[in-house]
Image (tube, rainbow, N blue to C red; front, side):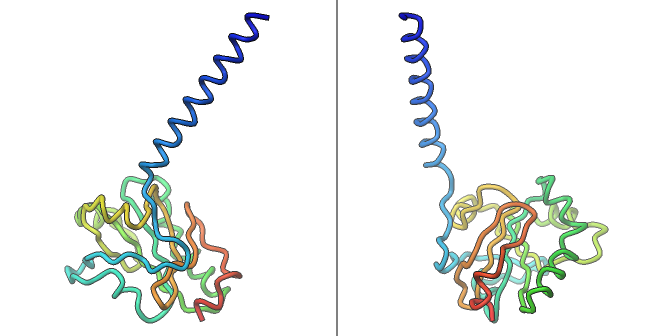
Length: 173
C-alpha cells in the first residue's frame, strides 16, 4: 500500500513538472497573427536588392506566403517538387494565388539554396531579425500562410502542404 502511494505521488509530481515545462515552452513560442488579422509589416528585400515593405508585396490578390529555411531538410526537398505541386493545387482551384518564399538567412545562403533549381518562386529576405520571425509566428519551417487581397491571414499550415481552400475561396476571388 505504501509503495502504491509513493508511485502515485511520483507520477503526479512528474505530471505537474510536465505541465510547468509545457507552459514555459508555450510562453516562449512565438505568437503569430490570428486568422482575419492583417499580417505584420516589416522591411524586406528582394534578391535583386530592392527594399520594400512586406505588406506592399501582398497587394493585388491572394498570396501563399511560405517561410523557409536553408537548413530545413523538408524545405530542401521542396525545392525540387513544390512548384509543380503548387501550380496543380492553384489550377485545381481556378484562383490566382501568387507564391512568396520568405527567408531570414543571409542572401548568399539563399542563393546557394536555389543553385541548379529551374523554377524559383518570388523570394523575400527578412534579414536576420528574430523579432520579425516572432511577429510572423514562425516556430518551424516550412510554414505557409494564405493571405487575401486585403493582406489578412486566411489560413496557415505547417509542413509541405497547402491550405484546404474550400473555406477560403470567397476571400481569394
